[in-house]
Amino acid sequence: MNDQVGGNLKRERFHALCQSLRPDLLRFAFWLSRDLALAEDVVQEAMLRAWKAQDSLLDAAAAKPWLLTIIRREFARTFERKRLVTVDIDELVAREEPTLAAAQGDDLAELRAALFKLPEEYREPLVLQVLMGYSTAEIAAELNLSNAAVLTRLFRGRNQLRALCGEDTRMDPEE
Amino acid sequence: MMNCAQYRRAVLADPRDANPELRLHRDGCRECLEYMERLLRFEGRLQRALRVSIPAAGAASVVPLRTSGLRRASPSRRGWLAMAASVLILVAAAGSLWLAQPHSSLAADVVAHMAGEPQAWARTDIPVPTPDLAQALADARVQLDPKVGMVSYARSCLFRTHHVPHLVVQTEMGPVTVMVLAHESVPKPERFDEQGYHGVILPVAGHGSLAVLARGQGPDPDMLKQIAARVQDALVWTGS
Image (cartoon, rainbow over all chains, first blue to last red):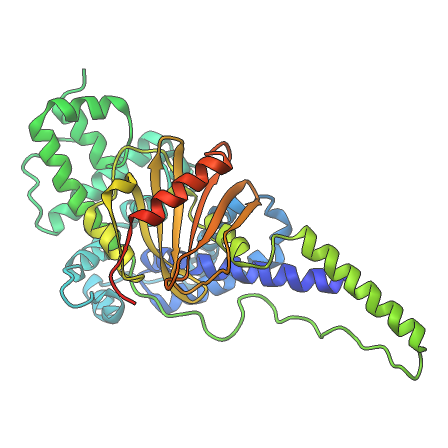
């Protein structure tokens, strides 16, 4: 009986944790895949995997990076299975228009479309840093890169993004 | 001494890098200060751009449905004495679980929410851009008097089905998190100490409550209480 009460409590706490983390994880998955439907599927699948493996989570404070790693692996599996074809960015932007649309008076749609155009090797570290709040060292650990490589990708990513958005880059340094 | 190109390369890779050398260069170079201000404005837009609206979770749970409820003993098979004993055991078990767990309560949910945003706790001297702060506060129809101190983190977070402001204020005793819980009322101040976080939830007359918490070696409880009072004093409610 104790086990059952404890099990239900455990389930409720895990559910609450997932619910609180889901918005940013889903956003991360969206920017990774540029496909909201696929992102939702992957996050749901990742959370089920996380539920089955929750005993390996020793520290609740590490839940977000732990789930994010599971999501990245789930994506890798999906891409292996699907053998995705080359994508047309304009088509992707058009397909995801409702998600990329900004609230009235907010000039973000152009920036979001520019993010779609950024190569994945620059987009992912940028999303990890700006949306997920990862430090350079944490991004390096997640992507299995050196700190220097991460900083280079972040520098190039921001440069490209600012140029795509028509920002004044005259004062930017050479690489 | 760092030159302008080195400074700009560093901040383009990480605009929130708190390296003192960067600060030193920025303080002594007007062009780089302007460059940084422009970059931070872009960064604020980028942060908002990444936070796309996403569909709410469906009715289905993200975890497997709960197992069947507790089985009821049949009075016909078990005597009243056995039934009473079962009830006592159930009450004792529930009591011990209640004592062992963070109270299923607001405090526990606030602490659980912290797990999702560990990056918020960074010590930094870079304030969050003003539009980002205003946007994070807008959901609770509240403004924050700058006298509260430097706000280094501001987000509007989904918490118990409502969007609530989640702020981090840099205090003399380190970063302190504030959650403005306009939809959550508490009858009296509630202190908590869970999973390395300690804090207080204060009732705010007519506006729900305010959670103020620190972690690890942050401010002691009395200091935290003073900070909480300062934050409460700095909140300016703009709607009912």
